[in-house]
Structures are given as structure tokens and as C-alpha cells.
Length: 114
Length: 111
Image (tube, rainbow over all chains, first blue to last red; front, side):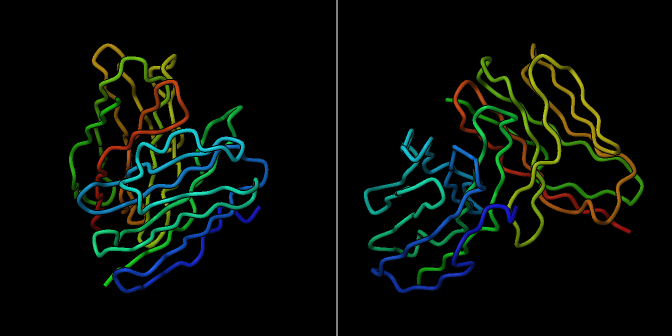
């Protein structure tokens, strides 16, 4: 398996622009997680899905952030409008809910908002 | 919710020495404790995990211990090598499928 795939790997955008991050989980995994990593706050869970349904979005910082999972093999995290404080590395991870529960992380998308 | 504290934030050891990283958690219902290694420019990768019904687990040079009473768990790396240099994260899970991560420890192994 190719593992969790994320695109793009790097994104540089100007404040106010819309940003869309993409994730393809490992085939067969039924849980998908979006994390944000910064030096100040570490690794934070933003939202997670089970069988394409959002279960907990309490980590989403504000209404500018939205996430969708239209099918089992694709998810997006959108920021509209983007702000400089959104600059971070965004990770997608997936796992199989019936065990062994390990979360497999993608390589991440480094977002820079100028 | 769960809160995970990790110490130290940075750790330097000589090649061949041992390294120990410690974490504490707040939710007594937590039952799964993984450790992740993150190399520069990559996503975290699971290196070892332990469940609450086990006190210790080993995998070659890596071991994890769990003290449920004190609510702390530790990662032990023996005979450290330069390729062990990375950021290590502990995490805890209580019931749901989401993990709460510590802030990370940057380990540097000096040749």
C-alpha cells in the first residue's frame, strides 16, 4: 500500500485566499483524522471521520475551516479565507477501527500564508 | 478532556547511551498509549505502543513502561544511534478513537 497520501506537499498563498488540502487514506481504513502541527501548540486534532461521517469537529479553530469526506478514499480540509496564523503543517492520518488502532500519518502539507 | 505532559522537551545523549522520555496523563480511563517518532519533513510514525493491561513492552532497543496508578508512562531507548535522532511524541487515548499528544521531545544523539 502507498500509505496515506496528501497533496500538495507545500502551499504558499496570500492572506484572504482559499486553500484546499487533500488526503487519500489507506484503503480499508474507516477512520480519518486531520491534525495541525505548530511549534507553539504541538500536534492538535482538528476533526475526525468514521465511515465518511464527521464525528468530532471540536478542534476546528473557527468557521473559516471546513472538512469533508465525500467517499472512503478522499477527504479535504478547506480554509476560507486564509490568515497568516493558519501557517502550519497539516497532517492527515487514518486507522482501522476494529484494531490494532494504529494511526498512520501522511507526509503532511506545509502551509504558508503571507 | 485528556491532558498529556511530556518531558524533557529536548534531550542530548552520546551515541551508545540510553535515553528516557517521560509522559503523564490526566484521564484515568485512558487505555492506549502509543509513541511516535517524527523525522524532519515527515509525518509521525508509530514505533511502539502499550495498552493498560500491560506494564512493560519491549521491541529490540526500545521499551515502554506504564504505571497506571501514577498515570505515567515512559519510553526507553538503549544503545542509541545517530539515526535515533528525531522528535518523539507520546499520546494517550481514552475510549474514543482520538489521541491526545504530548508536546514532543527532540532527541539528539551525538556521535
